[in-house]
Length: 501
View 1 (tube, rainbow, N blue to C red):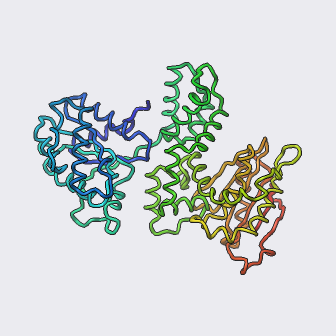
View 2: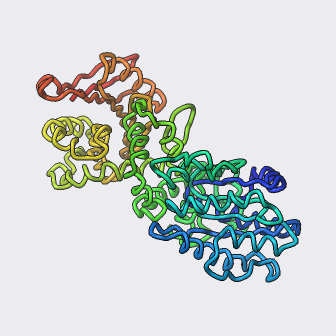
């Protein structure tokens, strides 16, 4: 276990003492429920308050009436209270019909101690039920602590603005009598730090004697980005599935790479849920900007960023908006270019390893020349067919290069919103190929692309790379005979092949 209440316990206690409502939000599988249970048991152990966790998820049915939702919520509170409280501390079994407000008022008046109520899945409610739920909590606020819980925490995936949007798409403010104006503070649960990942893995070592080297820990932290579910999933994939719980076997760094690929290929529920989010417009805008490297041009960009961060999809690193971790980055890009791949599989070029030389090395020149031909014949027709067409040029090349992965190599991608490019590094049996993709939006695209690729090559320690420039104008404006170019240049001592199309 990593301490669930790390870093926020003092602040939470302060809000409870001040009789405040507060909000805790974080992406799925980051330990929210574990935190709530730990907090409730800790508070109850101190005997000053009565603390209980409840979930309103059962009331999160879009077709529910307010009466049905109130019944679901009060029943859930009564049932779950048995896990945290003695019989004398629990609320009485609800007699329906009764509102959540009335039930909480009845319970509070029956207890000598103030109540702390921790409400899980609070953002799972819909429309009028969401509005009613929050108004009931607000209406009881003035009667705390004798006639209503002293402190209430709303816990879910989203911050309070998302509650508003989910309750009323057409009027997020809900007017002056907003049910959201009693929130004192909002906490966003952070991912694990390296030290916390290290502590977690060392607990396994203490229990079993199986050692995680610093290199292995570094890899696990790099691939997971400290995301709790991914951290545990990578370790579990190695220890349980790959090594069969043979604790005498030494864990090697390359096993982490294999575990990462296995998780991506398996696309378990947690990872598969990413694909569903890509259909949402706010997510699409951010993902498109990251993949294409374009600067944001949207009025609601900040809201979209906040929403994607709350979902755990992105992070801000050194001022750049990027995907939250390499596993999410790979899952998202593979999902986006899967449509292109599906079409390509029927092509002859996907059936034979024409890009592999007799000595087993990869002929990247041949592969990219084939892509130029392929792009000329298919791009205009295909790019208009897909939801993410603004990033379609980059996705099409990524899908084309997926054969490198299928053939036993791997691809590492570097992307960030607003940096004007997408970088790829293809690895094949000791060979490293740096590829930079850039859209020709300005006259200086070539010069900037050369400088950017030079910096990327320098960081990779490579002498040679490829700059792929995509034209935005149609073939009617610029004929294909003029658009398709291949030129080898020397730039600041680096050998660069420039492909235009």
